[in-house]
Length: 210
Image (cartoon, rainbow, N blue to C red; front, side, top):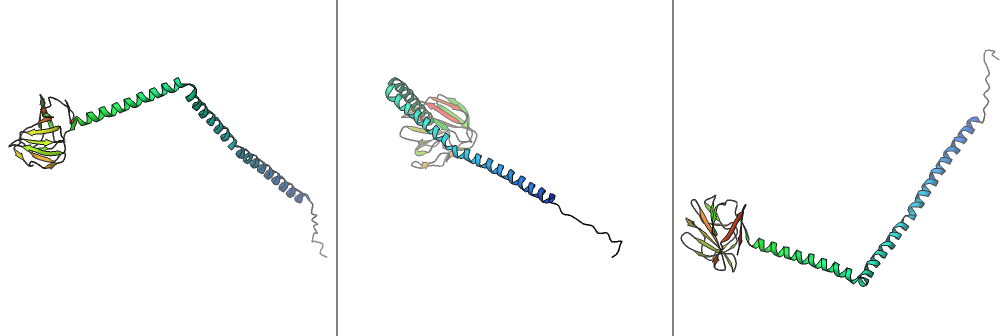
């Protein structure tokens, strides 16, 4: 035997195995704790619908109380009904007033400039071409005037024209070309056979009253 060779004896111990076993047991314990926490949270979520059930009962109770008030406290119901009726009536009145205002308002073509309003006669400038203010039918014309019947009551008479491009009986749309003028033209509103005197202008609109 070679005396220079040193024999080393390695004795295995259980320390390493014990450390691994302890670590594994430690991790398993932490995992169990985490699972317990998840189970508790899931248990709380399952109980949540009971809150909604309670709220539902409360809502039913409130509705039942309001229904009972309808029969018990007639004075209260009467006041609510009166307020609703007043509000509804006022709303209808506002709608009617707005509709009437819309009927008595004429939006002017973009090429129209109001030069003057005198006793119901509107003098316009701003272009050489006269455009129709409201849709209707040509009911009359002369050498320099055209009358458009808007409905059974309202007619619009355009004057001061140098050339007329429509004929009696023609259906004319809004802002369709009626004729030409040189420097200025006039417009009169005739309602139920009478010239409307109360005519004012606001921006690009004519507002008239009868």
